[in-house]
Length: 252
Length: 252
Image (cartoon, rainbow over all chains, first blue to last red; front, side, top):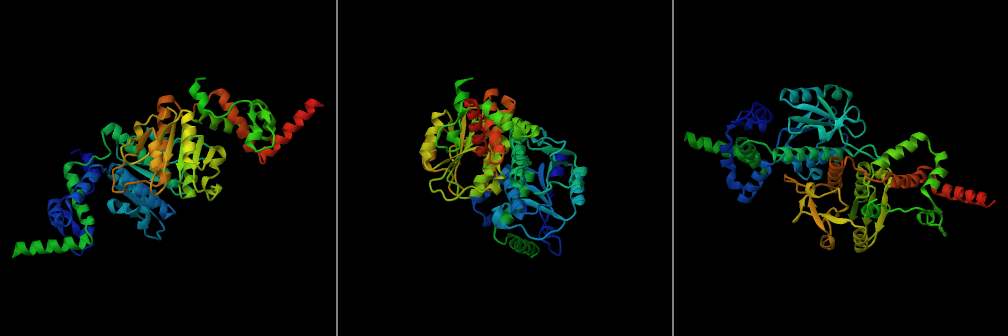
């Protein structure tokens, strides 16, 4: 595995379920153990569907939403990201008010890694540390999205509905992109803009890499284990219970 | 001019303004005459903006919306079509209720040729007669939108929010296309889907033809004349008045 690939994929084995589910103590488990625990609760068809979707997943292009006012738009962006295979998203909201409605995302966020931030600088620094190029959507001094290389680790930053990305974010950015337009209407709806750029990223990856997804077999198995838990009603509670039982059997 | 280009461009000189503005008698005028009448009412800046937008316009790809329930979606599709340079749109509504709200299109429809139909067969027959290949968006037995050739005359048919295009429309179609997707979410919002396909069409045309727009100089001047009228408040009334005056001066 190239160093780059490892840095993009955010999980390492063994997985600490204590961290995922806010438990008081750590609960270490390998992906294989986790899959083994959950498999009896999933149909084969479901398992195959999960494997298929995960083959199309990537962390190389992540979506960052900066201060969107309308949560319907946040949800719509997540829906498009999910449908196109982009697994990680960041929502920067310096004045958080609401939870994102499940109705509008059609459950898309359930299958994504969505990170919420109050501090834009902290978000950008973390993404830069992991090796992402920060690409803001901006109308000035920008190059067409077709010229951005989405086969490289890229964090696509979308600004709010009225003003776009903040000046601070433009300063922090490594590149600027714009959707080529030629009409009297000088802008797209934010959810349309996001979908267009993510589609372009997906198209480039299909054309140059043969597909959007790029996880190694090992990484796919790890993500699969986590999705198995999400696929079962109250899966997080169940996995704790099963894990405790299996440990006590080992001891006994 | 190739026959194909002539068939796609819908206007012929002299223009009959009587037909455009539902007058009782025909009012024949050339594009040059019309531009001459309206020029004093437009700033040079405005004239340049109009010329620039028209250079990016095409009739080779037209949008057809079949039975959309939500007029907000119709408006959003028109907005995307306008921003990307696709000049003609057709709205099929077998049970018409409302006018499209201007607020949501941001005035996009003002700069488009939007045709309203009650009868889907009549619409399709007219488009076929003019030489368009009818391409429906459909989930079954379809090829990815990237494989559709949008440099050829194509009518892109979008179905309604719940059921997609009707069976009757699928029967009438020459080709079927689908947006490649790889998530648990199996569909896009209709306005997002429309924007994605029109963006793909625009991208292909930029890549293969050097630009979206393809009107001849002569055609550009004709469209320009019509837009000059739309750019002036009550331009339609004004042009009738000016035309009458110029004719009476000729006689006198």
